[in-house]
Length: 176
Image (cartoon, rainbow, N blue to C red; front, top):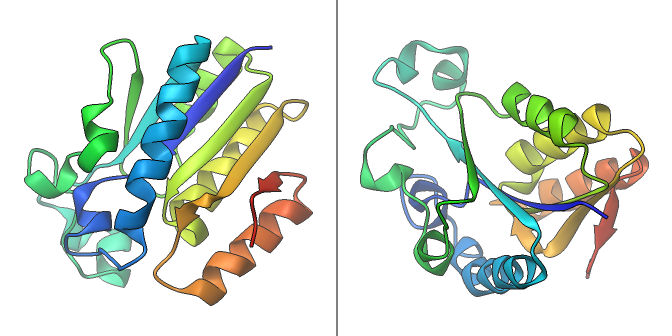
């Protein structure tokens, strides 16, 4: 079984920066442990990085979410805490200018994973978008989201996103 862990946008701006929220830092140890377990098993790890430039205010996202964040090269763009310290040179990093990543879809199709697990931020935005992309790219693979390793600034939207993913045959584990 070819397995991949996708760590979605666990960047400083989403944890304790301009778009941070109280639950986000509590995921650091949980995600770092998961990374260590995947690494020990010899499985692959991929990090997505929300990535914006100085033109962000002029983009559709910037007009709808007028909070500067994850500007490439700034401290807020960097991966947070123990998760950031666990990155290895062999891990894949995908910079994405939007919620979902077509580059992720191409990577998944190329390597034909049989299992893809998602952790990170934000459940109802980038985690949802990329899990759906993964399900479309690999319809026969087991796509999983660990509910104990994802979070949102809004608990209602977090739970709604988990419901939607379950309806799309994405397995949601560790749901409270």
